Length: 93
Image (cartoon, rainbow, N blue to C red; front, side, top):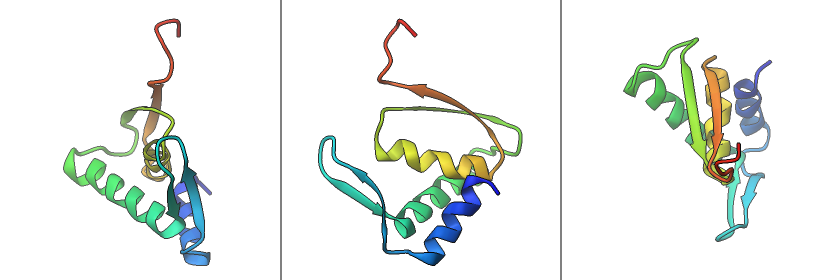
């Protein structure tokens, strides 16, 4: 089982339960339903909008926010190779 399947099943089990909370700048909470729906939109864009297919490499450049967590599940579900770049790291990395 990969992460994308898990998120979809989790939405079916407890759609209104809080899945993610970001409290850095402003408190933002995502339920499993909202998280799954937003990752599905991203997956659709990657697949249909720019033509990403199985085996392609996708680079995720993001800070440690909820948006970063939205990108992870469906890239796994689409079986693409993820490259993570965190904007919090400086030139020493």
